[in-house]
Amino acid sequence: MRLLLVEDDARLGPQLRSALQSAGYAVDLSTDGVDAEALGDIEPYDLVVLDLGLPGRSGLEVLANWRQRGNRIPVVVLTARGSWQEKVEGFKAGADDYVGKPFQFEELLARIGAVAKRGQGVAAGPLSVAGVTLDEHEQSLILADGSRSRLTGIEYRLLRYFMLNPGRVLSKSRLTEHVYEYDADRDSNVIEVYINRLRQKLGPGIIHTLRGQGYVFGERA
Image (tube, rainbow, N blue to C red; front, top):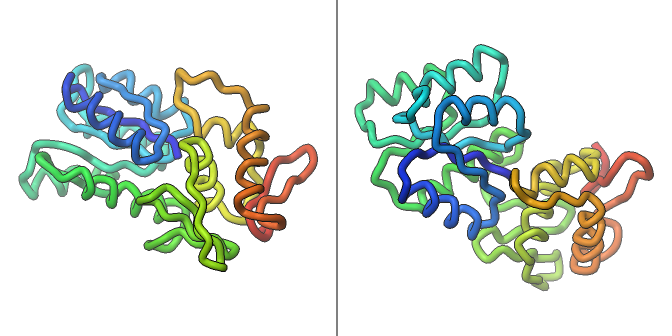
């Protein structure tokens, strides 16, 4: 999954980005409201973590502008403003969830995961599809027989995206857009290598290839 983190604090922003990357997300960091709004319209992010107190344009204005243009990207608002009135303003502007500073990183992770699953129409709780369960804490997969395999960073991002979109045809270009960051070297042919590695760990009949279209995880919807 690919996130846009919008945080202008010179210390907190990079720290959060690093922590989210360690948790298995591809993360782009923006420190300005105007830049963030443009990125949220152009890039295919799965979720935005949005601070409200931003230079250039406030987070509430950014969020309201997205919603007015029909941009339904899930947004978790992150702010030091703790009054219930400001929380209500955030939800009215279109926020999906709200985390006040200071916070525990584990809480933010839990809220990001819940909002992301809800946005994809996936039930809350552990991801389990086609006899495969994803351990998001250990970044490993568990098969129906109980055997477990560790995943590399890209393997984990790729498998989680597949499992959040079961039965859907996903092209190589779409997969590339959602597992790599903005400034990464995006070679869509490398995706085939990672898919083959996943197939070796998952076994046959889980990831299907549709010639000229892409891949399907599990049974096609």
